[in-house]
Image (cartoon, rainbow, N blue to C red; front, side, top):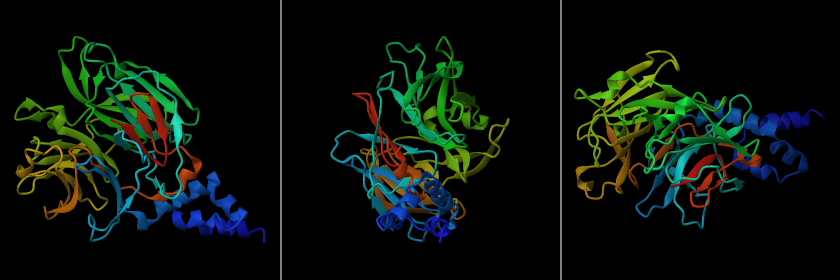
Length: 391
């Protein structure tokens, strides 16, 4: 009968996490199997490989009362209408949070079943103007928080301060380098985590502060290294004039790094959007102009894409001009038929977040979960497999 645990191990990896959490209560042997790090990783790999999970999407939006909502949308015809809402991890707090991303793996834990929080020590540099990222070191599986504090307006020539927190070592470390010294990043800018690297749209500023260039600032999790990457040159010109960096955002398309170039941008965001994709990561001239999203009446901000290629939009219209910062609507765009389909999911401007690599896992049993950052006290906390930061 010594083969039974191996059989159970194989069978259990094919079950949904919600059933596995219940099976832990059956006997000590099953509990020991299910909570072991080896099983947790095996179950995650099985979930990722399971084709039934492909197309499931995680969405965060913030309603008009600034209440956070987190929903899971399945791959079906009723996408955007038939979905499940999961609870916000930090109940009973009045602080506001910004969703940063998943912790390296495309996962989100069943936090409504099992909650766990970890406090991270106060960073060395405290500042209101900062940006953050979170990912996993592909070499050793260590989860890392990277944080860059921008200089104060009173001292704009002061270089940014960068540090990284390792969840395995439980400590902050400084990151130095000439690359980070000359960059500024808009606090509104989204980030993209592709190929084990965090990416932001950034401004490279000369020493005398009179020249600016728009580039991609990247941070490779595995070796704690900042680098700069060029944008497609055609995306930097609009009507023969340099484009405003606010009109560019970064994301993912079919698993590859992508640039979303808004050709018209206002509070209503009516206009078109060009999609650029980096076909070969890290090579010279890697960008391809894929297509242009330009439906009748204009679009909103492109915030991501589904596995099937449908665009996910944050839309506004002329009627929302007065209150456009609050009244936004989620919609999808079919790149073949150019059809736009809106949903009754509404939220605030620039506070939508999507990730189409969602799978369920048991990583919450290992800890290192949701991130909470208190800008006033300098505290960060982790709970679940997604990351939150106070704004």
